[in-house]
Length: 276
Image (cartoon, rainbow, N blue to C red; front, side, top):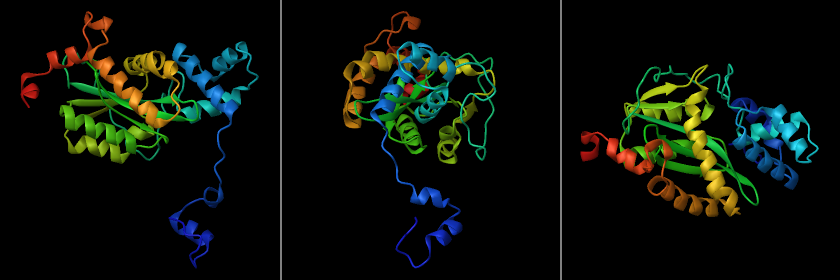
């Protein structure tokens, strides 16, 4: 977008595009090995105690022998895209310019596949570096319908996962998300609107809605990611291909009388949708 070889000065190009000059001249600094180790520890603590904020996570790190301040913990948590899971006025980092939608699940009984879908993003540690995982889940069955990896927290990989889920399984009646900027972005909500999917967004007091997918993250990390210690995104992708097949088709779910998510999904799918 900015051409430093152009006759127009960079300063003027930035003014026209309303960009900060500091961002143009900034040279990214690689994440240090120590920060990578701290992020891995923070991720494990967050999975074990999802209600912990930066202060308690810092205390846990102190207990593990890490000399770290709360500000650094907060900075790393922001980079990882995680925060404490508890009731508070702003559960997710939203974008002030994005449209927010009402919460549609209050008092709703969700017992059939494709009634409600939900999504979230989690941090995935690797031996060298890290990436982010988004998954689209059917609420009633807990079946993972689609997923994507990315090395940035943008909306593009979320839209890719959503479009794949729709292509494979049709459209849900309602899609419920938190108010994270990836899900309130026009490119994401427009995909839902053009497919006539009602948009529901968690508001204040709806923190429990994330519990289902938080349990998925815990299963993925303890049963695959932490055990395999993947060194690249391609290895993570191959590993998760196998894991999600196992999770959907082989792993019994205690809440469903030892049925797998795939069994529940296809058993509760309406006859009309099953025929399609």
